Image (cartoon, rainbow, N blue to C red; front, side, top):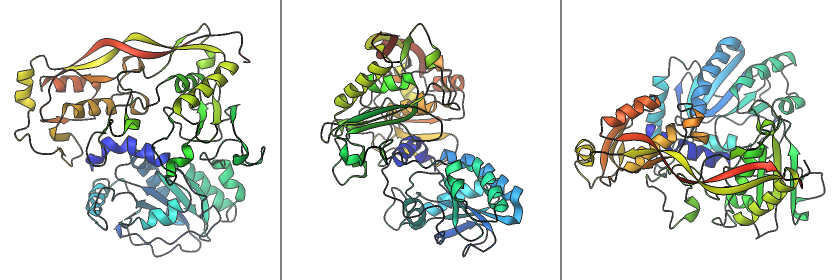
Length: 489
């Protein structure tokens, strides 16, 4: 199971940003049938019984937010008792396996068995061809997990969302509203918004095709939600049949602060994240696929503020203050990353007017070295250099066999990093890129435990003869200075 953990963030990002079609399954529709491959915990559920409310959650063994939902779902089952039925369906488990293979079922069974004491509801697993994912998630225009459907006492979908903490309120509303779908319920909890469509298009000036060029900047009201890009690129690598084709010739950001907007407009046009292995357990070929390059260790991961007044840059995830929506559409075929950034810079400079530059500065990084390379190799070097990578299927720790030093960097950057990799193990002031300067190119064996604190992992690395120390090197840095008088803000 843990073979997928290192890929989880990349996999989840790809899933959460996949383009969608117009959903065929909506709130108010009759819930589809449940036809899993196997019921793993609890009795099988033949159909939705009249007079009972159902909570149907879609998750996976490799999904951290899904694991976090387990105690919430169990609490729901305990709180509402026999008036509801909670069902968890494990999907997206067969990726990377041969067609029609059911080898993933054992992995799900072990996962559920391990957490059995915490799971107080029914659990089932999807078929190899993803029947549940197709008839529920895809039909509802959803991608990524977790997602939750609440079914009312008449068998109709009353609510669709991803936050398990909102489900109890939905159940109480259903019980007090005569057990029927309330058309306003979904809008109150999950305001209707399709982030795959350009902001404010519908009913505001005509169809999307009417616009040759347009950009919109609005204040964020906290109601709509969407995943935001970490960088701007042109999607030039996709063809007309790709689901990513809808992302061409546009930029859209929801609920971003000023610094984030400027970082997108002035930062790099490749991701600033450590390289992960792909589904085939290979590191990306950035020569063959240049869009997979990374600015990790080259571009500083956040803007530096050199402004007199920091107040406009203060923001919180729980408040709409100092947050904005930005949507840009450019003519077909002109959406090169540099063109999109230039247009965005013009808009930001016109409204906010801050003076922004990309400069080279000495900044800190975490240097991985081997002071005694020969001694380190005696402890790390794999006995058979011809074997392929293997990561033991264990929870803790990760046991790597025939890995490379980049796997150590990936682990460190994945669990002690910044941005989406920030798990609070390093204070913001200490976060930076991890760079391999060991000179070790051999295949290596090692163990690493992501539960360790940063100081514990440093001490653990020392047992292999590896040192993790702070050093300094030139980074490209986005610097924001005081506004010019030409701004409209």
